[in-house]
Length: 292
Image (cartoon, rainbow, N blue to C red; front, side, top):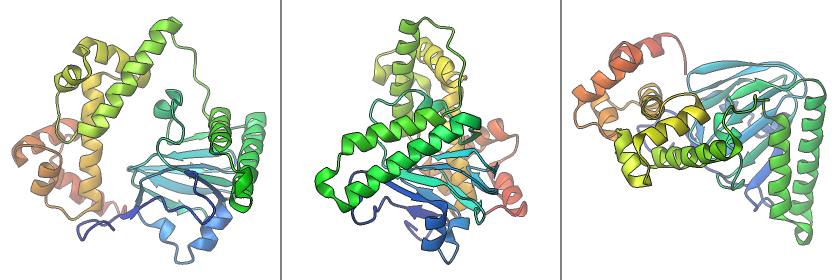
C-alpha cells in the first residue's frame, strides 16, 4: 500500500536480479510459486504493463470493474494504473511478461485501442507462443550472460510478440496520411489527459496546451478511440473516481478533491450524469455486490 487510505496493493516495478532492462519474462506457474499466500487474488494496481497469454487451462481475472473469463488462447494486457486481480489462475499455463512504461517507444496506436482481454486462436496463437518463447530465451540469456544482453533486441522481440497477439482490426477509412496525423494527435491528447485529468476537466484546456483546436482533438480521438474528446476525458475522470470509491476509504469529499473538483456538489453532479446515481450510492452498490 502507498498509504493508510489505500485498500488496494500498489505494485512497483522491481525486476528480479539479472533483469535490469525494463522487461521480465515469467509464467503462470512462476506467479503461483512466488505467491503462496495468493495475494494475486486481491486488488492490485501495478505501475508497469503486464501481458499474459494462456497456453492451456481456464480461469478468470478482473480489471477496472470488469470480469473476464480465461481459456486457451486468452490474451490479457494490464496497463499501468489499472486496478486488477487474478481471480483464479490456478489452472492456467502460459507466459507472463512484465515491462516498464516506455520500454516500447513509438509503439503503434494499437497499444491504446486494444482491449484488456481478447482471444488469439489457431495458428496466430502458435506463433504468439513461439514469439513469447523467443523473448523468454533472450531474457534468460541476458540474466545469465550479461555480455550478450541487448535491450534493443528485447524491445523488438516484445513488440513482435504484441503485434502477433493483438486482435485484428479492420483498415481505417482515412487515407494513410490522415490516419497517421490522427494517431499522433490522439497520442498527444491521451498523454496530456493522463498528466492533467485531475486538474483540467475541459477539452479547451488541452487544445490550448497542445496547440490544436477542439474539433481536431475530437476528430483524432474519435478515429483512434471511437469516441469524442470530451467523452474520452470524462471516462478517464470517471474511471479514477470509481477506483477511489471502490478501493480506498476516502470520503466522497476527499475523492472530489483528489480529482480536482472545486466542491463535492460538482463532483456529485458529474458522477450522477455519467452513472445515473450519486457516488455514495455507487460505492454502496459496489460493496454490496461482493466485489473486492
